[in-house]
Length: 256
Length: 199
Image (cartoon, rainbow over all chains, first blue to last red; front, top):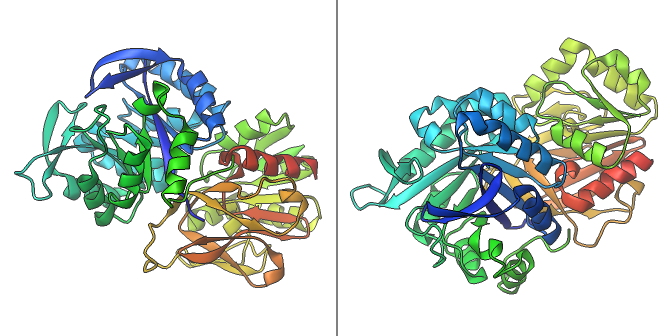
């Protein structure tokens, strides 16, 4: 049976995992390699690492983290943050990541999606999209970039469709309004994107309890759900989440 | 010594990393003449069939792989490396290696599922040394839009379902192939690679 994926997100700054609320006020919470290995043992289905330093001179630290993670875990993982060129993508993929995620850089330079897809295949290219509720936009959501600081002219659905047309193989939809708040995912936006594109959609932003994942799989039609705070602070384990989803009749990976 | 075939079809880091983790001796090569050094071959691959077949023909690796497979030593195709072992792929209508009988077709777009299939799925295997000792209900990681349709049922090693039933693994004699990625399928995937190493 095909299963819904639980994806754990680790924000990495200067080689350390960090966690912020609404993109602000970050605190260090551990070593990304050790955390990745622990979550792998706990049965997480996939991991995403966002390099939130993303300053050019520190890129090497992240590549080293990626290479060390690849030696420890044998499930797919994605790396995003600071990827602006094909050469940046190559560095991350060659270090052992399965996928790269591009967000603001793809809005500024959409051909980056095409280049990545033609070079590595669509399955390697994940579009990260930050959306904020905005009544002026046709879908009701506007694409924002630079960690939520800068609004763009893109409507959420128009950009999702364009990115898929260019070759994005998956979309991570992050709601700026719910990120880090732990009151649940933005179900409406997730369902809109999931129904608008043929590729898998990963919901992000707002998970606080396992029931939120059940909601986003059922009502939000998400294919995967990203979690961070609820597992990083020890409130829930991957297994707690999976047991809840299993009881709700949502197919999850139960042996690993 | 396992030879891992490099034909510029996707990244080989994850296969190499998994083999290294399992403590296995292997080399990665784009050169057909080096297959003589291998007592087993892993043929990975991600990407598109026409390009992959073009690369294999250009280097002469297509002939070398057929010869190796015919020689009786263990051979494992993974993902695209599984698909292009068959006679023909619907993906831009390309003739493939013809090491296994059958063809490669696309998931129907009207089955109400996302295409590609990206994620974890369970597989029902028949008994075989490659899949010995796997936990019940083990899941494997898939990324694909096309799947294999063997010409004969007897080479089907594992079945799965994604909107429709499909063949997830095959075996004929010394040739095994999986649509999923054992190198990215956690411990059950590593168990399959370990079994292959031990054949």
